[in-house]
Amino acid sequence: MNKREFLGMASVGALVAAFAASRMMNRGAAEEATAGTTFSVQMTDAQWRAKLNPESYEVLRKGATERPGTSPLLKEHRKGIFACAGCDTPLFDSSTKYDSKTGWPSFWQPLPNTTIRRPDFTIARPRTEILCSTCGGHLGHVFDDGPKPTGLRYCMNGDALTFKPAAA
Image 1 (tube, helix red, strand yellow):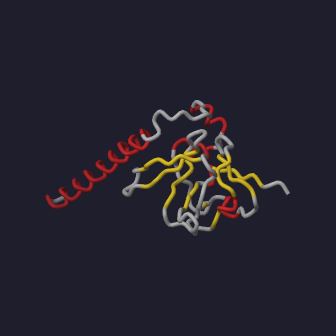
Image 2 (tube, rainbow, N blue to C red; image 1 turned 180 degrees about the vertical axis):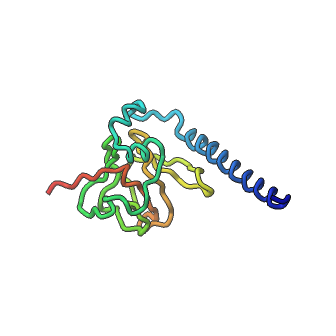
Image 3 (tube, rainbow, N blue to C red; image 1 turned 45 degrees about the vertical axis):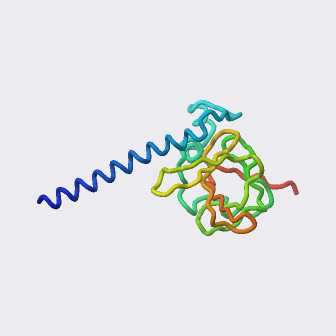
């Protein structure tokens, strides 16, 4: 390896380390935005693991993102309510669901007082994370490229939701 290759590799390594440190610091800053928030449903990590399937646990409790196009809720078109898979809080009315062509269930508006917004800097560009206001579970993110009347796209993880059909 010559000097130029060595310096190039060292630069790449430094960038990767800086990005990783930035992600860790920014996750801490995002969590500070809800620090002091008391959620009415609280469980230990062991209780959450016992209650949720592994995929829902990773999304709701660890902030993971499911693979696009994998949620059965993408094809859910009945009238009803989409609720938090962690605590059963009603979050979205089916009348606000639409096909955003992103691979995740999308809505243009949550039900009133059911979600909390928090800044999220875990990737290169800032986003707004959406949490369940009852249990603090990570649901997904909101973007400003949605349809009227709000212009918002609540891009939710299907693993964070359940569907309750309306009574016939």
